[in-house]
Image (cartoon, rainbow, N blue to C red; front, side, top):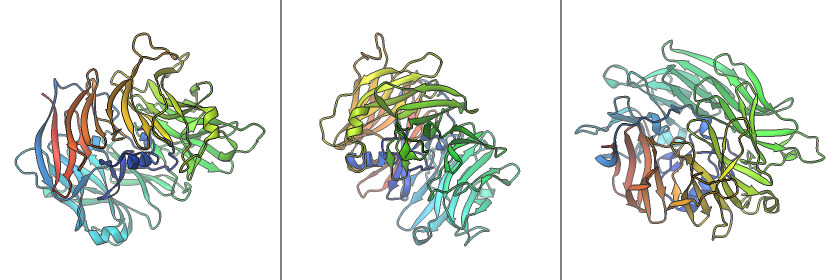
Length: 535
């Protein structure tokens, strides 16, 4: 998901994870629409994480159906749904939380038995009192599960110390063992990413970035002495694992900077000056960085955020600006995207890295309602656009947005491109009602008269940093007041299954032919639903 209106907090966690009864910053479950809209305001760019970012494989005829359903002991969640299913498709790596304890477990998703194998656990009192937390990293190519334990360690060689430990479940008989430990007396873990191709883990904590090489069992500081900004500084790793990007607001060093993940060399991508750029977002192929760019206000020479034409939140500029700038990793400007008389917001990269999508709002109206309600700009969003990256290309409006019926701020943001990278699924609405739509260029489309968009469903699209994609189709969870629905979105829009709004349903994991959902009805038992996607 892209950065959303009002997004000024730089979280290092995958978007789409919000506080759940199991703990903070986890998968997004069904909730009232107003609550989800407020949550969306705090989500950030998908590029905080490295990821597979590859085009989907086609495995046969689409025919999603539940092939297994089993109970789990407590709430289940993962930090990276795309990478938690084992390479052989037989197990899922997940965090389980109930009133007694929090645990990291490997759960069989095939066969007769689905008993979880606990790799690490801590009693509920320890978790709540000392802030121990788990992060799922994923699986090695040899099928070994990896995870992170952050906070005060309750077991292992560093029990009693505060820091970040990387653990493996690949010891004899599946017993977990600590691989390495990074001492962190103060501050927090921001980002933890495992790159299977390089067999390397990157750990970003307050004021420092580290890499851990599994083959050599070696921790290397990539960069230390970074600012903390009250623990709101976050570095975003490129999908290929070669660079980090981040924002600096230092005297003599202000702007968007890039860091070589091997050498630790730091350079400016876009230094603050006549323009101010912020919230960098990697393209899926790791070749480009997209940023929001604001112009300096007339008659002002300063370089603080207040000196530029931007909207400020409690922790920095919101993701609204007169322009979006695309640069390569050397800092060369590839494209500057503007729409006359408009603010641009909520950009989203296409999976093939050839296009971005964004929404626009009228600048004059925005100036009159800059912080109209709850600190949220009451911008009247009027269009959904795409822009192909390349010389001579111009923005293409694929949907015209009319004012929603409700009162208060409106919300508009792209959810994802279609498989062809041409049309866009997007959400639009207000604090009371929101709907999912599809807008495509189609024959005869132009910047002035796009084809009529297609309404898919009332409700909100559960945001994930990476949406499941199967051939020409995307899988999406859409929740309204009455139901949560699983959809396949593509050439033909198809509702696969649905559950009452009294149920709690969220995406747990997926691979090229399977979807795992966490599911709970009221106070009933927690379950995992296993969908086989292909015939």
